[in-house]
Length: 270
Ligand SMILES: NC(=O)c1ccc[n+]([C@@H]2O[C@H](COP(=O)([O-])OP(=O)(O)OC[C@H]3O[C@@H](n4cnc5c(N)ncnc54)[C@H](OP(=O)(O)O)[C@@H]3O)[C@@H](O)[C@H]2O)c1
Image 1: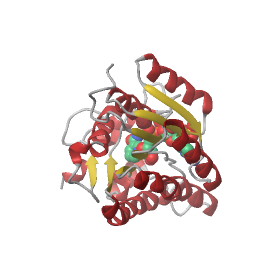
Image 2: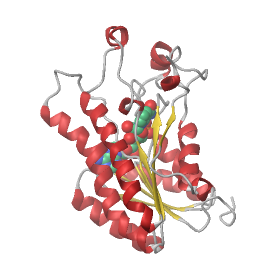
Image 3: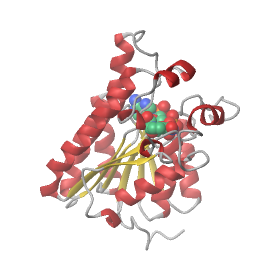
Image 4: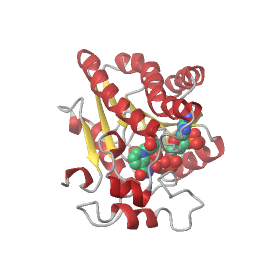
């Protein structure tokens, strides 16, 4: 691996939720493209494994424990992150998830927890990292949304597959609005802010695709997404990570305030 000529050469990137799934794959791809990586998440042991795997391939990475829903934890983690490699150029606000119970059987505590991780967490980390991006002369923020922010479900789907929590839908829609808002604020500081909106991606956190699920979510794909997509076959973490790389790099220098679907064409269909 060369760290000299990649699309993120010389940059320092923070990836929240970087110890699993889409965040883990993005960490590898960012490192391959020459960035120094700070992975943030709660599970230290899992984070150190990912760091070791990135270093094994010649990349530079550090894990910092962080609960994005807790502002004290975020402040401390970002302080450490900024001093680890001396600057921050890229932020991938990826930490999140949480299917939860469906409405109207959603306890308020669960509603607030899912909003806290997905939406408030994106706000906390962006706010803490922002001065470092300004200090670096600009940068790129990529926020993790979801098809849930843009699409609901038909009565037929509801009957056949059920629904996840309203909190997840509301949180990710909030992330989209925050993305456009922050893009406006970032313009004068040369900070671009964009989002990615995945459909179903086969990761440990995907619906029905927990790490203990023997088929890694394939049955959910077969039941629900296979017929809904235009592109054939399931989506994988690389499909999202490649878009995140584009939005994090100077290749997308003229794009800000956009949230781009990476969903096999689900949202494009009638
Ligand atoms: N997979 C899909 O189909 C899909 C579709 C649309 C959107 N997304 C979004 O993509 C993102 C990544 O999901 P994934 O599918 O890759 O799932 P995943 O493998 O479960 O990854 C989620 C990551 O977020 C971290 N995380 C969760 N809560 C956190 C918290 N409070 N503080 C810090 N880190 C936290 C987890 O690590 P720790 O548990 O160690 O903290 C883990 O690294 C999520 O925001 C999810 O909503 C996924």
